Picture 1 (cartoon, rainbow, N blue to C red):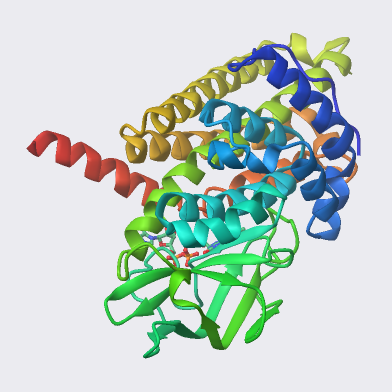
Picture 2 (spheres, rainbow, N blue to C red):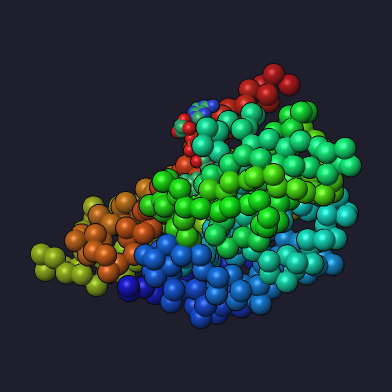
Amino acid sequence: MTSSPVSGFWKPLVESDFVERLDAFLLEHVAPHAARIDREDVYPMEIVKALAQAGFTRSILPTQYGGHGDFRKTIALFEGLGYYSVSSAVSLISIFQAQTMLRLFGSQDLQDIYMPKFAEGMPGAYSLTEERHGSDIRKLDTKAVQNPDGSWTLNGEKSFITSGGGAELIVMLAETPKGVSAFAVPYGEGCEKYVGVHSATMGLRNGPHVNMRLTDVHLPANHLIGAEGKGVRQAAMTLSFSRTCTAAISTGVARAAFDGALYRAHGRMAFDQRVLDFQGIQWYFAEMFCDIEAARLLTYRSADALNENDDVDRYSSVAKLRACRTATDVALQAMQICGAYGTSDSTPYARYLRDAKTYEIGAGSAEIMKNTIAKYIIRGLEE
Ligand SMILES: Cc1cc2nc3c(=O)[nH]c(=O)nc-3n(C[C@H](O)[C@H](O)[C@H](O)COP(=O)(O)OP(=O)(O)OC[C@H]3O[C@@H](n4cnc5c(N)ncnc54)[C@H](O)[C@@H]3O)c2cc1C
């Protein structure tokens, strides 16, 4: 599958030495495998290991575990991964979601167990969804009951677990007597991962999004994350972080589709001129350029909100909504500009489109983003 040169329109928005190191890593370890991972729908364990070895899986951990505490760099990392391989990006985002829940809400005890493992590159996943509960996770069919000694027993079934195939620790929501609560579930006795009828998706293909059956899974008392009954709020805060990462991945996809179409239009002749010389085609590029610019700036603005811990819900929802929509629009437009070449299995445009569209649903659908933004607007008015 061909890959076009990277255009220089979007300058790094973080320190250039970080970007240079990142670009070299992506070109060596990620870009050559992107098409195959998507085609074969496999968990890219080799890439996850390489990310860990280069320190990228530690980015958001507390500093004593190798984190750098700068969300702009994390966003640059996802923008780069999104440019070359969304499948690899979603493997990292799953790890970061599990890490975030633990970092923000896990007891010191729990952090002491799992942070060193995460620092060594342990793969993780994040599991909210069930067969009957997707956008609405206020009630769940997976139940956790507390035993007299304080330990917990979990029973039920989770679905759509991205990176579930490779994950060793799954951060999971289950219903307890006080509401929905979060747990750290090491993959082990009583856990059965399997590929369900809906596990294979058209985009974000890093191995099937597995189901997991839990049969009398026993967890020590300290594996409850945060306070009992606060799982939905904790999950929402974790998702606010990952929405910014999703926006960055989508910005990367949009940039890749734009660059590919640009070089194609520049090199392709029709009616004795370059395709790029048709004004109608130039206008397409001008529109895409503005949309990508806007999505990218919103995404980095959201990274600043994360750095300052200020209004994260607002900025992450706006960035995700805009960037994911932009990626779908740009991928479609790029395919159109490339003509038949854009529809060929030998080119990446269908992959861009499949990944972009899937991210308008996964990690919080466009409608849920609009609900969050609308709530923010109404609250602002009433205050
Ligand atoms: C590729 C992929 C990977 C995923 N990975 C994970 C994962 O790792 N972990 C995990 O837990 N989940 C994962 N999911 C599940 C994902 O989080 C849910 O698909 C998503 O939350 C939407 O839920 P749903 O699909 O059940 O849609 P539903 O909740 O059934 O919604 C159906 C439609 O109704 C709309 N809708 C729902 N509520 C409202 C409302 N209040 N207002 C307006 N419209 C509304 C939705 O936006 C959607 O358009 C993944 C999904 C995909 C596609």
